[in-house]
View (tube, rainbow, N blue to C red):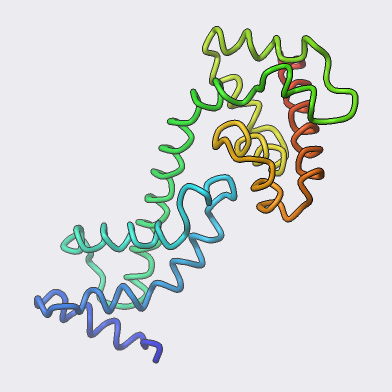
Length: 202
């Protein structure tokens, strides 16, 4: 049975009095609300690294550690406090993922010439990878990541899945709900778009 606002208020009071499990009950009553926020805020690119339920669980752990700092007494006070904590947790997760993957993306997003030529009929030009190869040699990861973030979401996802996470096209096709051939074509378009953005940057 769903908890009512008065139940949450009672559990909060009991938690302050040291009654076991009271805080857990109050937090659990907020889980659905927090999951909805996490699902809305979590980018598709990050879902493979951590789901909404993971973020909510981490938020609950922080809430237990910092409950002494909570000043509210009502359900709405608790929801607002947990929402701020969840968004901070998500920001930390997002920053950790993007910052630690910048260099990995810079080093791995471009395939060999042989792989570049197999993505679409006729292949790509022989020298298509040279601008990115030069950037990798200079460890220009910020520029590469900036361009990735400019791409449409499906292009960015397929490049990250293929070159950062090393997923096979068969798995990428399942994730995209497309045929393997369609996934390869999307990847080839994404790679070509990446090259165009790279070569056209100011």
